[in-house]
Amino acid sequence: MSTIGIGALRGTAALVFALLLMPTPLLAAESVADFYHGKNISFVIGYPPGSGYDVYARALARHLGNHIPGKPTIVPENMPGAGSLKAANYVYNIAPKDGSAIGAINRSLITAPLLEAVPEKKDKLKFDPQKFNWIGSTDSAIAIAICRSDSGLKTFDQFFKKQVIETASSPTSDSVVYPTVFNNMLGTKIKIVSGHQGSGGNFLALERGEAQCYIGTTYSSVESLKPDWLKPDNGFMNVVVQIGSEKDKRLPNVPLIMEYANPGQQKALDLLLATQASGRPYMVPPGVPVDRVTALRKAFDATMKDPKFVSDAKKTGISVDPMTGTEVAALIKRIYATDKDTVKRLQKAMPK
Image (cartoon, rainbow, N blue to C red):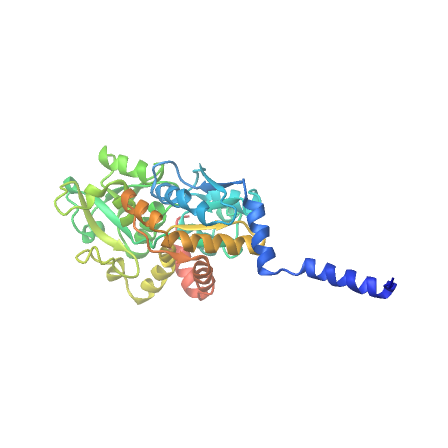
């Protein structure tokens, strides 16, 4: 019988140990599948039930798990507060950093740490958008300003001539940030009545006559929650301006906010509105293992092409114009490379 020397045994053991540590694609896939098998993923939505962000997130939640290795169950959980700031802080600091929690937050929070100049408010932003692991975005979002027809407000030009009463949500929401910037930078006369919960609350305020306009909602939110309002003969609502860097083709006759700004103001508004390309962003906390982030990104991309999801989106009344997680991360990197003068110009116009 032949014998094996101690040196040979040690060499074989070292080789086996090295092979076990090697992150081969097969082992990585098995590891992700094993982790997610039989598990729930919390889908933390920063807005109340029935809001635009909620409708989009729940549509994604119904299909995303089918494309994640191990096929976990996605469980939507609403965590409204401060324009989804509560949810952003939770996902960044408290949620498990293992890939079992996904966040859905307002796109404008992506730029909040960059643009906030007030120390007391900045201290409340307990997250760094550049360190989130971005999974993707289901839709680009062209914001609009809508007004009740019986208010007599048919054009945005009227916003410069008389006071306009606008319904709004929390201080960090688009419905507060956008009109504040327009007042301070462009000279509009918008009175902001805040405190309504999400798109649903603001739409209800319009219906009750508590306000004349709603500024900063999106075409997709109106399309999913109040589709009759977008019909040419609806008789209830006028779309008076598009709040974006480029026009939405569905509203060819509605002017763009850039038409009311000079070149310097346009550059600042471009920064303010840059996150609209990632209109419905989703992310997981920093520290999630790379293989799980990769798996979640691949699952998101596959869901966007899934005929069942596409069909569900149509039935729900939501539009789909996705960005990959890599594209969202690249967009954020470009935003945070903006020159200081433009940042300061916009900071001066932001809510204080």
